[in-house]
Picture 1: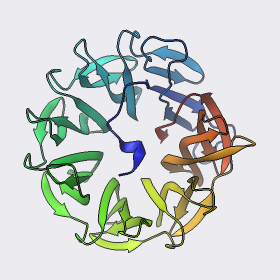
Picture 2 (picture 1 turned 60 degrees about the vertical axis):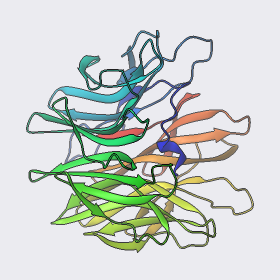
Picture 3 (picture 1 turned 30 degrees about the vertical axis):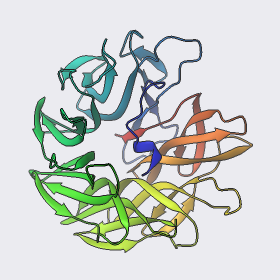
Picture 4 (picture 1 turned 90 degrees about the vertical axis):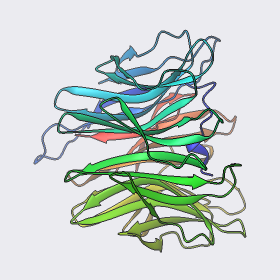
Length: 349
């Protein structure tokens, strides 16, 4: 399983960052991008979900309970953030914030629930995630304007990681596992109908979905029995290995621009190190992302977006003393945002 999609949440909180691109393309005017940054608590107490807008911080939670923000989406003047916050019983409650204030409470707090991705289309909010059932099994869930629909089969463990809406169709990328948690099978739901992407021979997971020019693109990772991991791209259900198979690699996010398809994640650039390093793939060709630290023991890109010919990625790099740094890359150039942090999503407008 790709570690950054873990349901573990105990010691991280989240924040969103809105920054203005220093040199926006002339044809697009001012460009903004926002980054979700989970920040570890340094001095005790619960981590606080925080949103930064053009450098100004605003807390989404008050620090009473652990909170995590996973996704950000902007429409018109509204900034939406999806994530989860623990309640008094220690259960994760799926939530949406709008413009820094609570907007939707998606679960009732009796079982853990995680909002992993969101989008807005025609003033309707769509949130993908998963909620544990009474047997403790995660069930892939799509919330539409706050109303939950279980799209996963409760006989299995099912996870929804990313949602995308295009031309009235709702696409959700995720995975199925056995009831005992073993095995990974990449799947896509289209308007709630299940499509299996993995071939069942190697384990797979689907982490992101996008559409362009009438095509449906799904990014994910394939896990071979040998231990090799491959970046995968499914185009209209047809699989293609994107990484070269010589180093372990995984994909977390996808973006399309004109006729180009971008995937981001990480790969073991130096096989002797055993660490992943951040990268993105444009139409199958790998592009390394420069380190934000002089000395680093790895990292990965968690999210990617393209605007006006510029490529933005957000992720994390780890220092030699095992401290995580949230990083944003613009056309491959890194900017470190915060220590004890991970950038989880980027939105470009």
